[in-house]
Image (cartoon, rainbow, N blue to C red):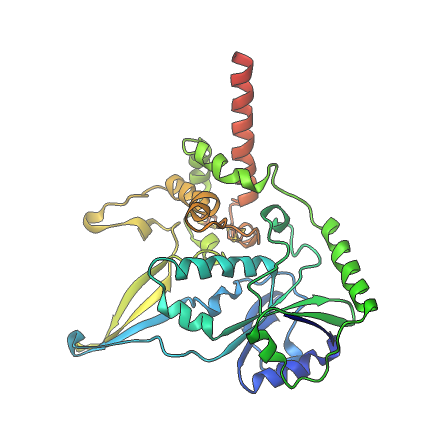
Length: 353
Ligand code: SF4
Ligand code: SF4
């Protein structure tokens, strides 16, 4: 929709202007890591951050959310889908943008999720181009999420002393209204942008041993793999991998009832397919009662089920789950291991023939 250049020194002034009409959240350092939180002082925002502990998903799909209130034993019910505070999320990495694209698709397909949509409509996304790998575990280049071409309202690229500002929507345009510290790019600016972008690609490496388009088939052929039992033996069922994941959205619904047992709130809270109780149903039956089944479900969901249901792979290669897992279960190792086992099996069959 438009392209501008903004001096980096003007960023705090822009954030301050946005704060007049929005809640502004972005990455900030805390205890040696980075977290997304409310920006109180515009100088505190750190757009040059490696990764965040929790993804920015938390502002569209909060860990705890009130769905409805009820009174008089349910005679009065009020769904909480009113307009949310307009929120600007600054500094969203490209992998997290791809994750939000998937979440948007999931929550607008079939029965649209009104709570999600109310938040999403009031959220403006300012993403930033990743110019170097954020950590050893990320594998965004293999997953095709190293850059973003849609979904953003504004996309920033760090040019050193300035930002290239790519305006992707009317919402994005509105964020820049009345902000004077911008100029139209010159030929020299376009050359700078091209140089920065062409220099970034060689810094990232492919970490999967196969092309991502093969992943659904590899998983389909690996349903009976012994690897699931091996992962199940190691897994602690802590659920941390799903808690930090930008594409996980499974939840539990719990009622918080007052002492009269007449009035209460219905809450949606994040849940994890990796914990024992997740698949427990009436009568104490559990349709994924062991950790091997739960690990298999997790990885099939990431690499096959989501793709088949929504046309997008359910893992964006952020690496957060690998960083968080105490027993070092990682998507890269798992996917590569399944691929190598299939390949070895194919070779054995070829030799026998
Ligand atoms: S973080 Fe690791 S140990 Fe915990 S549930 Fe996930 S895979 Fe299992
Ligand atoms: S599965 Fe792991 S690497 Fe993939 S998107 Fe989720 S947290 Fe990131």
